[in-house]
Amino acid sequence: MITKDNYITAHFIDNERKNIEILLRNDTGTSMNPHIIEYDTKHLHCQELLKLCSLDELHENTYQKKKEEKKHFEEMVIRIARKDGLIFDEKKLDTKFYPTLVKAIFDEEDNKDHLFALKLALFEIEKIRDSKDTAKKKILRTSKTKIEVLKTAFEICK
Amino acid sequence: MNIVCTGKPGDGLLRYSYEHCCYLNSVGIKCQVVIIPNPKHTKEDYIKAIKDQYKTYENIVFDHYTPTTTETTLIMGRSMLTLAYLDRKEYTKDQLLTIHLLFSNNVIALYAENHPKEYPLALEYFKTKKVYDLCDYKVYPNGVGTQYEKIINFEVYKPIKDDIQFKHLFLGTNEIYYKELEKVIDKYPDHGIITYNEKWINPKLNNLFAPISNILGKFETYVYTKPNFDPAPRLFVEFKWLGKNVEYLRDKNIKDGGMIYWKRPVPTKQIYSDNINILVNLIKEIK
Image 1 (cartoon, helix red, strand yellow):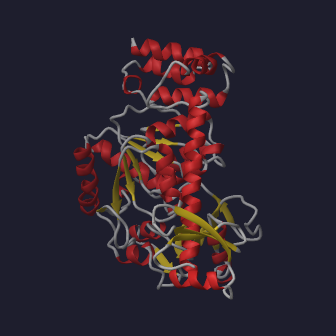
Image 2 (cartoon, rainbow over the protein chains, first blue to last red):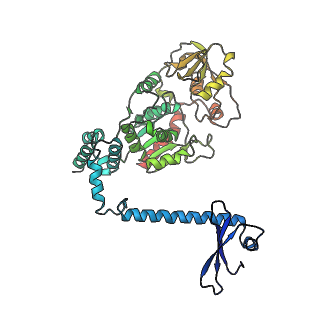
Image 3 (cartoon, one colour):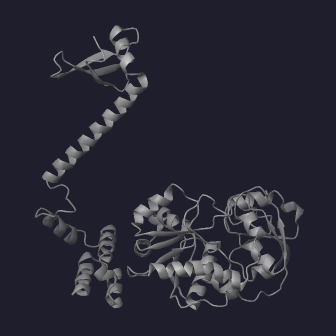
C-alpha cells in the first residue's frame, strides 16, 4: 500500500515510460525499499501513487534522476581517467604530465594545429605578448616547428 | 587601439571602421584598422575600396598583427566578432592567431542583433577579457551599453567628381537585396546595380561590381529598397549630404535604422565630434 506516510519519491525506469520505481519507507522508518510497478492507471498501486505524485511530477522526477545519474557517471569517468593518467588536472600538475609534454613537443614537430595551439598559449603569457622585442615575437609567430617556437619563447623570457 | 574588420569590402562597417580610425588618430589616439579579409575577397578589394573613397590610405594592416595585452580592440558591430568565429575554419593559422590575440583583449563593441545565438559563443571561444558595449538605442531599443550613434565622417572623403552615368542607383550586394530591387527595376530603365559577381544576379540588368570608383558621382538618385533590417544606412545619408535625390522605396513601418537615419540631420563636424567623444572618453577610461 502506498500512502503519504511511506512514500518518498518515484520515477520511470525505462525509456518507454511504462514502469515506475517507487521508494518507500519501511514501517519503522529506518530503511528505504524500492518497489516497482507498471504504469497502469487501472491498477490500485498506480492509482495510489498518482494521488501522491502527478504524471507531470513523475516525468520531472525522471528527468532530474537521469540528470543526476549522468553527472555522477561523468564525475566517475573523470576520476578514473585522472587516476590512470589519461587526463590532467590543469590546476595541479604532477609528474605524470611530463612524458606527455615531451611527446607533445617532439612528436609531429610541424603539426599545424599543434603549432597554432602552442603559439596561442605562449602569446597568452603577458611577458611574451607585451615584450618590446618585436623581432623575436615575429620569429615566434612565423616559426615552423614547435622546438623553434619554444626556443624563441625562452629567449623572449630570458 | 585596433579596429577589427572581418566583413566584406563593400560593407558599411569597413567604412565606419576606417573613418573612426582617421578621427581617433587625428585626436592623438594611436589607432589602426586590422582587416582579416573575408575568405571570398582579397586584400586588393579592401585597398581599392578605401583608396577610392578616402583622401588617405593609412594605418591599415592585413592578417598579421600581435597586439600587447594593454591594447583595446574596437568593433563597429558585434558581427565582426561573430563572423570571425563562424569563419574560423576558413582562415589561415596566422589570421586566426591575430584574431585570437585581438579578441582576447578588452573589446569595445557596438551593439547589434545579427547573431544573437552565436555572439555569446564567439565571446566564449575568444575568451574576451571584458566587453564595453555601445548602442544606438533608437535603432536597438532593447540593446545594452552607452548611447552611441554610427555617424559618417565626411571630413575624410575624397571630393566627389560629378560624372553622372546612370540616373538611378540600387544596392544589390546580397541575394535578399537583389531579389527586392528586381521587383521594381523595370520602372527604372536607366539604372545601375551595385552588386557582386554571384550566381543570383540577373545578367540582363545593369550590374556594377563592387568596389566602384567615385560611386557617389555616377548617379543622380539613390533608390533605397533594402527589405530587411538596416541598422546604420550610409548610401542615402551620403546622397543627402551631396544634395542628391533619394527615393525611400521600402516599407516605412520597418523599425530599424532606415527611418531613424532618414529623420536625422545630415551630420556636421560638430555632430560628429559630439558623438565620437563618447567613444574617446570610454577609451581614456579603459586606459
